[in-house]
Amino acid sequence: LLKWDQALYSGQLIRQSLLDSAFSPYSFEKPGIENYGYGWRLKLLPNNKKVIYHYGKWHGFNAAFARLTDEKVTIIILGNRFTKAIYRSANQCFDIFGNYLKQFDPNSAENNTEHDEEGGK
Image 1 (cartoon, helix red, strand yellow):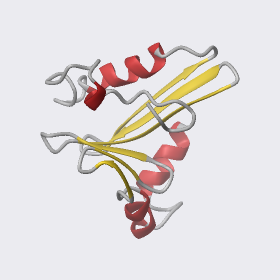
Image 2: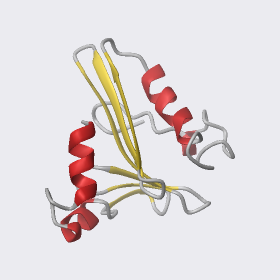
Image 3: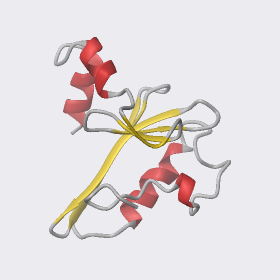
Image 4: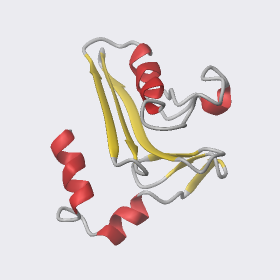
């Protein structure tokens, strides 16, 4: 996953214009806050920090993959049994790299990035 992310940042795997399209909102769950691009969830925080991420689970396993593009940081957490702690851990890591979520209540519906496999909350 790290090599995949590095390839995305390099511009050699996918043209930047295509990546920009993938990271643009097309499905407006909460316009300006929580949106969906081409295969990626997009969160724009009130402080204009942008998080590009996708969390998921499959038959007992789960993963969190988040890109903090301002800092060029990627957070990858893999779990070998399903637990929402993986998602909470990823969210808590955001603030290591900048003022992302600490200004909000992480348990509130607006700031909760824990989605089930159908994409709902």
